[in-house]
Amino acid sequence: MYAIVSDIHANLEALQAVLEDIRRRGLSERIVCLGDLVGYGPNPAECVAECMRFKTCLMGNHDEATVSEALGFNPLAKAAIDWTRSMLKPSLLSRREKKGQWQFISSLPATAELEGWLLVHGSPRDPTMEYILRSDTESFVDEMPPKIKDIFSRFRTLCFVGHTHEPGIITAKSEFLAPADFGGKYDVTDKGKMVINVGSVGQPRDRDNRACYVTFDGRVIEYHRVPYDFNVTARKISAISALDVRIGERLADGR
Image (cartoon, rainbow, N blue to C red):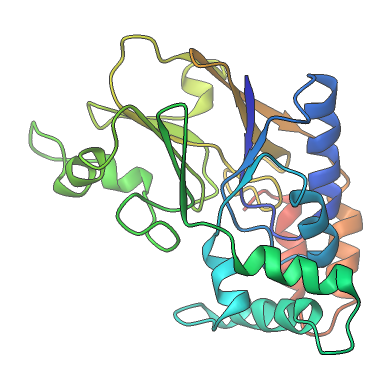
């Protein structure tokens, strides 16, 4: 069994709560992260340090922009990325720990395979940037939308993603199933290909302010929601002038 997390976004309080929940399940050595370790949140270095212990960790679009350049981001996100870069990028005199964190985040892979499942942050077509949205699954004709059809042609069995911060499963019939539609547990046996969005640890956007992640034993996907003190994170954000206070305020609403 694996614990699969994504979109931590430098939210240390959410990450610590999720890691404690994972530890209680005995899965601390089997954590997979689908990217966006940083961006938005106030604790990038601490979150990167935690992620360096994971079994597998991928590059997200905010990670990529942090180590290169924030192109195509809205002003709120870009300001957070620029601040994150200033916190993480080492100088010649920086400690070995800081240099190691920068090297780690700079060398994250864009994709990985785990037991035949494809792992990406965004999409098989564009691993860091492309969104697979609920609206992409909708069609007014009785056939799979071209975007979803193309995406499904690019993996063999299952594809785990994050990026949208909206947990759910897209089936081979182009149905979007939210966790509430199946009670949070979904048996994938004999159901064909599917895309599984694992939700977000540090920036949930499905109107549930609890951190989200999944466990998977090769048969059953289970979604877990973990409460944490988002007010602590929000206060940290408001204390950093480079970060927009709205980033912290929206944590309470899960949006």
